[in-house]
Image (cartoon, rainbow, N blue to C red; front, side, top):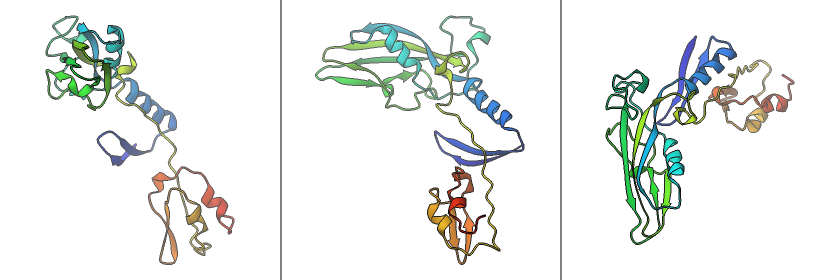
Length: 220
């Protein structure tokens, strides 16, 4: 099996895999979603909540705030020596939230969560948690721990994990007269005219719509 990284960004990863059956590829996809441990808020202690949302709803929303994870610094709570329901510094991270709407209605966002570990913070600070009317206040403590997606969806490390068949495109240079009809029909822009020849660029973007084949007057 060979793996080639095609694109790697902060929140996305695209790679090409060869030398395996599609059943194995699907198995890798499922493992990425359900077997990779990540941090997520699991316990919430609400000290004060005068908002319109119940404590259980806020705890539910906090559980689905994705957190950055450092697997080298924490162990699974079930394997930790502390045997505590809320965990310890080896298996748990504490996040606190204290917010109040003083003179205007405001939204409380994930950026207001203060973590005991600067490495374990929300992936995005723009996730809304609750909306407070004037005079309303919320104060709580949340405890995050390691878990896997098979246990609960909030521990899924990916929001989407998909695969598709790789395309294999071949051009018959002896029969092709470079009429450019296939270039015009290709919505992904993977065909290009260089000099007098049509060449293939970024064939991994091909979605196999077959429009290039249907537009070719040479009946390929």
